[in-house]
Structures are given as C-alpha cells and as structure tokens.
Length: 520
Image (tube, rainbow, N blue to C red; front, side, top):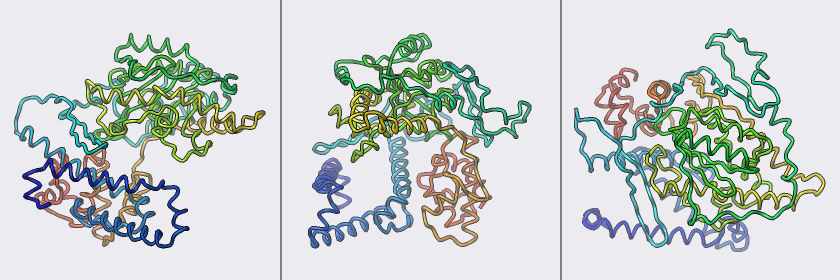
C-alpha cells in the first residue's frame, strides 16, 4: 500500500497488517518447533525449502533492523547469532516505542515551556486487534517518581550493599553469624559484601514431612468469581501477615520496574493462600514489608514461586525479606523434563488458563492500578499452589520411593536460588567487565571502530553510567544503546550535532548536549 493510502485509511492498513501477522504466525506454528528437525531428515526438499525460508526471513529481519534503527545495526548471520545478539533487536524496538511515546505525548499535549505543575494522566491503552490476536501498550504520562517517597534513600554508589534486615525471626543463629571477617569499625570505603543472614537456616533446613507425602491436590477457587484483597495500609498488612503465619503453603510473585530507576524497584507483590489472593502496594508499604519475614522464613511454610532468581534478589534489596523453604516450580519443570518451562505453560497445562502476558511489560508504577493489570498480576499466584500440588505429586511419582530423589533435587536447586545474595553493580571503566560493562555490549553489537571511535565509545559508556547513577535512571533512559553507538561512530563535537544523532532526543541528552560534545 502506498504511503498516501496508509495515511488516508490507516485503520484498514492496520487491520491488513495484523491479518498478515496472524497468517504468518499460524503458518509458523503448523509444525511444533521440536518436530522440525525430524521432518527435515525425512524430506530433503522440505529441508531445502526451510533453509530458503530461513534465509529470506533473516534478510527481511536485517532489512527491518536497518530501516527501523536508522543506522547499520550489524548483520545477523544465523539463528545462533540471533540468540547471542538479540539485544540489538530489543534496542531497536525500545527505540521505536520511545518514538511512539514521544509522538503520542506531542499529539495529546504539545510541549510548552514554563507550564504549571503536571500531574499523572489516566493510564492509556493503545489497542490493536486482528482476528484472535490483541496487542496492548499501556502507559501514563508524568508518573510521579515513587523513589522520592521511599523511607530508605536510594544508594547507587559502588560501595557494597548493606543488608536491611534488623530483626531475624525463626533464627537458628543470630545476625552476626558469618560476619567475623568484617571489622565493626571499618569505614564505608572498606566495607565488604555481607553474607546471607539465613544461610545457616537454609543449609540446615529440615523439610516438613507433609512435603514428601502423596495426597490429592487441592483445587483453586474459581478465578472469575473471587477477588483479591488490595493491601496498602499497615493495618491491612498486619492482618494479612497474621493470616499467612497460619498457612502451610503460600504462593508469591513480584512486579518490578527498572526503566526510570538505576537499580529498579518492586512495585507490586502478589501472595495467594489456598482460599485468598492478596495484592500488596509495595510502593506504599516499602518500609514495613520486613514484617513478612515471620512467614517467609518459617521453615514449616512452603513458599511456591516460579523462576525466583530475580525475586529473591529484589526481596532482600528493597525490603530486607528472605525466604526459607522455597519450592521453585521452574526447577520442578526442568526435572520433570517439560518441553517449556514458563509459568504461562504451567498455567495452561494444569489450570487451562491462558496467561495474558501482554501486561508483562506494563508500567507497574501506575496508580490507581487498572483492573486488567490487577487481574493479570493476581493470576500469577492464584493457581500456583494447585500447580505446586500437581508438580510435587508428579515428582514423587517419578522419584525413588525411599530417597524421593527428584523432589529432593528440586528442593536443593530451590535452596541454591534462595541463597542468592544481592550485590550492587560495580562499574569497571578500564576493563569493561561485568554484565553492564562496555566490553559485553561492544562484543554483542560487533562494531568495527578505530582507536579514536573506541575511545569515544568507552568515554560515553562511562558518562552514561555515572549520570544514570546520579539521576537514578536506567542507562537506556539516559542514552539508548543505538544512540551511544551512533555518537561514537560520528563523534560530533558540537551540541547541535550531538542532538542530531539522537531521534527522539532523550531528556537527559537534551540537558547535557554541550557536556557530551565536550567529552567527545
């Protein structure tokens, strides 16, 4: 369709586009991914057609990346290259979404200088439908920064993380255990990482006998005819904690935000018992959630989570909360050798519930929380205890009846997850090491810079990290990767040329364009 026709009848073009995507998705799902290799070995012509289709698709993807990115994004060579360097695709899509957001802002309220105080708008849902598919993009303008109200100051420095836990419920050893090597009169610059406060309890955990007994699973309450309790006051939190302390199993999940924050923060916590769902406003109750340690560290209460590696870190970083007796359904799915290990797969398999993962990347800072987002958040834990029952029974069925080896292995892996300790990201300007260092990013993007461009790249990378820490913003908000590479490639030395390299212009780049030009 010509550009003029798209503008004249955008809705028809949009519907045609989504219909084409539906057909492509159906075609690609005609054969299960795990069976493709089998069919390739049966029919050489099928294998040749698959290779041709793969080459054409890869060429199309590379062309889209170049067009959407506005610069040579680096050629993706094969499927392994796509997996290893998928961050390029993520950055291009992030850049497109940023442009959409800026365009929507300008369309609804053109920017004015010296205006009055701005308040958060109502959440906006951009909706696109086609046949059975529906895509949602939710955001709100001018959301107040929650971290400005946090009772604990944000610390983005390179000094080691200081544990927040002050009182240790269900303790077998006190909080000083394992801290013999830390001098009490050490200065902040001499601080070293503190040990996990529940390391001893987790390593010497005696699991309740009921975990190793075969018993019928307890069916969840109907999702549509029940509701969650919204917890945003200390009284409601204490009432919930008293209920949790009487349970034998609870399910837990978190919703996190890390785009407008350097380290990120938890915005929402979902907890389900056998008969009640709770959704906790962790932005409002951040300073009081340590009360959860009474139930979360009780070895007689099973805590069911899925893929808890990040949750364990976030709980201790933000609230000083730890987990003893974790059952991670992700590890169970691995040991049961499932074809997929996602929570969405488990929900469909055991509860025939289709998880609406379109809300997964929503902005969880929004208050009040829209109904659809609340429903999505609640669904992550509502069925999880039933899934725990089914998976525990399946592990026992396949285990040695004497040693319970598969269930024990799941609990061992879950314990290793629970023992994870939060460590702050230390920036290595010289060597570029670490997950967020310049070396990892440079190797993924596979750019060929001369010595001068490479020096500019490292300097900009270090500047971005420092500004992100100072402003408590993510590095991608300060300066997206695509723009960082473009600045390093073109090396502009005038503020106007710096801004010309960035479309749309990030707010912090707008403020610091002269500093960036001087740095280059």
